[in-house]
Image 1 (spheres, rainbow, N blue to C red):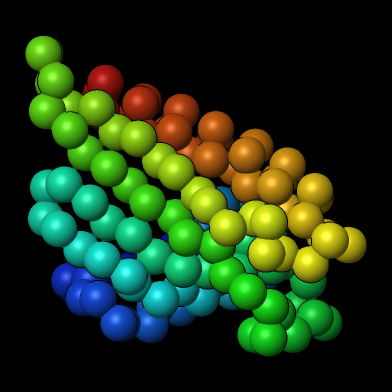
Image 2 (cartoon, rainbow, N blue to C red; image 1 turned 90 degrees about the vertical axis):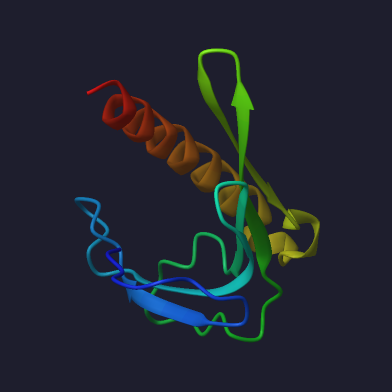
Length: 115
């Protein structure tokens, strides 16, 4: 997803994922918190990729990006919480797919920072 502008708490953001194979997936998120250079968090519906399903009545998870100064640079910690509220019939798959997705995203971030 590409976004031009500043994030603000309470702002709803939507767009299509740009990762190959997932371009059809519309991502919707609600910005929870924005502390520049420290924290960015948002709510979303995890692994909501089936366009025939209305996920709007499901609970959301919260994704937090924490930045911390450490010796030699900056440490990024990503935490997604709230899976216990996701409907049981899709909870395990949503958790597994998001775990895989975050691992891939963190590798991309690491490559970008190292370049």
